[in-house]
Image (cartoon, rainbow, N blue to C red):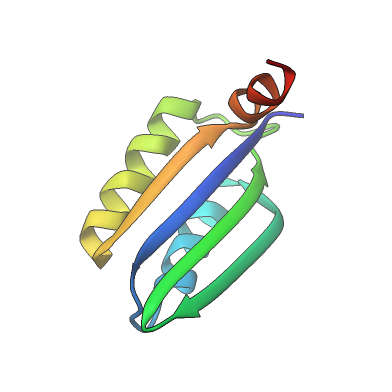
Length: 90
C-alpha cells in the first residue's frame, strides 16, 4: 500500500480539518487514521493516508498540501511512510 504521513501544525482556526480533508477526498486519497489536538490555541494533526490507485504523484500532492497550508495559515508536511519505516530499522 502506498501510504503517506501528513502533519498539520499552526494557530487554531475554523475549517482546517475540513479544508485538508476536502483536498484529500477530491484527490481520491483515503484517510486511514487521524489524530488531532489543540494545545494552548495551537492546532496539531497527524494523518496516515493511502495514495493507492490515484493518478497524482507524491510530489504533486506534497506541493499541493504545502500550498494549501500557506493559504490557510498552517504548515502542512507530507512524507512517505517508507521514511519512517527506514528510520526504525537503523
